[in-house]
Length: 399
Image 1: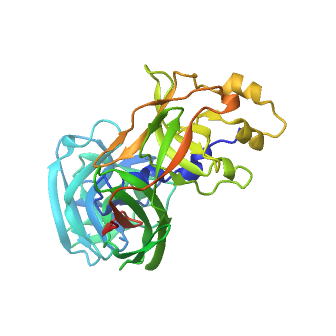
Image 2 (image 1 turned 180 degrees about the vertical axis):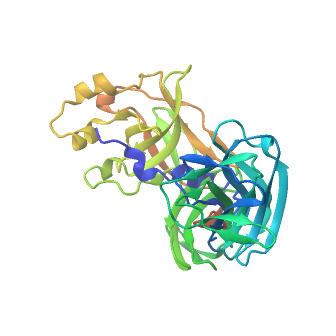
Image 3 (image 1 turned 120 degrees about the vertical axis):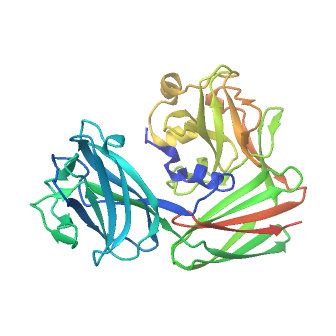
């Protein structure tokens, strides 16, 4: 069986969480000129220090320093930041034993956020209290032995100090202007999006029911570059799921992207849910796939485990194979006891009440995706993001 039916839908949970998880607008980025694994350790006596030259990317701010070290004896260390001209930018002093033990291992040292736009040096003076790890397999000429008064640098032997600069990239948020136009069979929602840093990532559309506060429609478009115009069409419908006389509404369903042509008609729509094999569990996050016929054709866990394939989808994936053998050996669903709880998005993420799977898989579980005409007042929320996570939003009253 092909692995990972939901690989085409991998971004869906991230898309859904954009509205409910705060975005910091900053992404950690470490700068390291070694393979990270110590081949040996070296301590330096007197006012000699371990120095590494770093070249920061644009919009980068230093926040922490990581050192691979091992305690040699009790005492102090001094960590300094020098600019490219060997002038002191920052200094901190602490006890070596507060960070390092009797094995060569990594420790992080907090520093105040310092925006560094030019090459700089991290210099560790350990006064023979520490063995600092070295990488003998990497030679980038980034490591030096430093001395003070006056500040001087000497290249060591053919190795690099295991010292890492950790910081984050600050990204200016995108800009978004949105408008809508009513059609006879839906609403066109347009957005003009730009980004001053030229690193657009995508835009997501959410349609909210103003009365219930629930999301009834989700779409996303991936973007790149500095400017883009995106056009979404909401057909003024709300998705629900039925099973016999049971019905839950609204549910989140999106068009599945990147599905091979031979199976696309069976995986037209994807809906996140919680699979309960029995009321006692186990429970697992899953995706339910519905076809162009709106019938349920597959259930797959986010861990990649396939719990159900319809006869039509199975035969498209495995021509000539016996579906009865597949049902006997692979399907984990228990008729009448296994249920799906479909995702609901409001102020928080939650799940609808359980809806139980009925009938034999050979004749399709009696579960369908339904489209209902929208019958409330709605708000469109557009969330534009760049590749670093900075976001901008725009809201429209759709009536």
